Length: 263
Image (cartoon, rainbow, N blue to C red; front, side, top):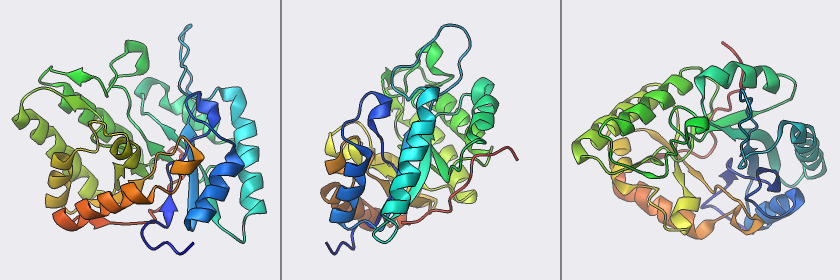
């Protein structure tokens, strides 16, 4: 299939995260059928928590070798048809991040993307996608994201507008402006998340991307595929590209892949 709308997707999940469907191979075959040139797998990373907390929406650490082996085998098998990259989506939790980087060092990971689903960390259950009315919550989210991006480990920021803020428009715009200034200065791509778009969630937020446009931020489209059929979501991509044209957003297709390691 000839496809000039969407040729890369670096945001792809697998069943290991407990909320996706389909075999790894099916994602690859759908990507090829859809006309993708590059497919990046970025399933939800394991994390190393203290105590008895257990996360249900990410793969277990003992599943990582199988994940790595599967993606590398598919990369070899389909090398003449598509470029496959091995990655993870993960949050930045300051007190646990070094341990995660140590764990990553065992594997030939091409990149990680930041998907900051929680403020502080999930043990405190401050989920970013829930409605927050506290006037400082958007800024707390932004400050944690920037602190994580400062590590230099993340290739791009997934759904940067995930935090659902019910406070004042002024506080939202102040925090979003701070994030976009940082992203533009440091060339960190911001994702228009197409899972949110096709499921009509509160993100992607058009008002956020107005601010991103003012700062000439780099924008990348991410399918956030949890089913093989969504790995090359051309309909959502068309809408996202309409946003890019209307706002004058600087869309990129292939970001600089950063390996997750200590500086």
